[in-house]
Amino acid sequence: MTTDPRPLAVVTGGTRGIGLALSRRLVRLGHRTVALYHSDKDAAQAAADAHGLHVLRADVADSDSVREAARHILAEYGTPSVLVNNAGINIDRPFLELTPADWQRVLDTNLSGPFHLTQALAPAMLAADGGTVVNVGATTGIRPRANGANYAAAKAGLLQLTKCLALELAPRIRVNCLIPGMTETEELITRFRLDDPQHRAAVLSEIPQRRIASPDDIADALEYLVGPLGGYVTGQKLIVDGGQFMW
Image 1 (cartoon, helix red, strand yellow):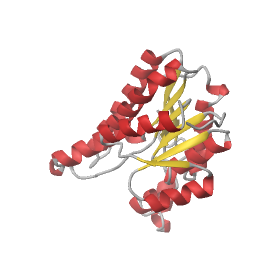
Image 2 (cartoon, one colour):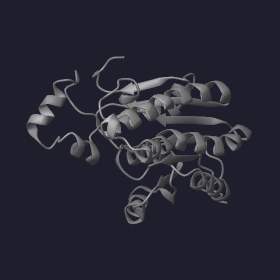
Image 3 (spheres, one colour):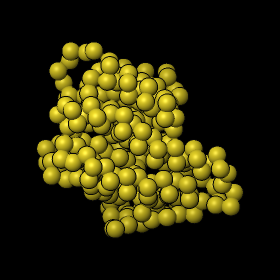
Image 4 (cartoon, helix red, strand yellow):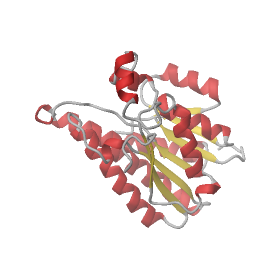
């Protein structure tokens, strides 16, 4: 096990997009940060080299893979004080065309993954100095959309899981849900055709701040939730969407 005295953070899906911004921020805040990735080893290693991360492969949709990753983290790096359940996938189809596999894969990744990893790491966190868990949700978990029943159901479930864990793991572990709005990532640009000026203008017209969030905007919110200024915040959802929906 490492003898590095810095606190440890774990981020799933932590080597690209929003997850990479969250990993980078935790490094900047002084955490040794283990970023879990699923498939692209070369890209993950490049992120590790560029940003001072430790990377570890795990499929968060597979409970055995998650628990093996947790065992490796505890043995190799120690007990985390911050866990960020960020990994997620979309498989969008009209409801009547969703297959059982489409349904299950999205729920396994977006809802069961956070359940399994938090359950695997929380006992060690409780036995140590406690800490904080941040589940990364989605606006779709509150405001439904067509062709995303599996994703919306998973993210809505994640909100309730957050509240249940906040009750059961208190007072040593705080648990909150960070909900990004439209955020400038490669995936979002592709999904919403934001490289088309007309499509981008249509999206911006719905956001009072008249801009799409940067990944660092989401990392700012994470910094609040895991830091001392958020020390009395638990069981909450923090929506960072530029006022688009105002729930």
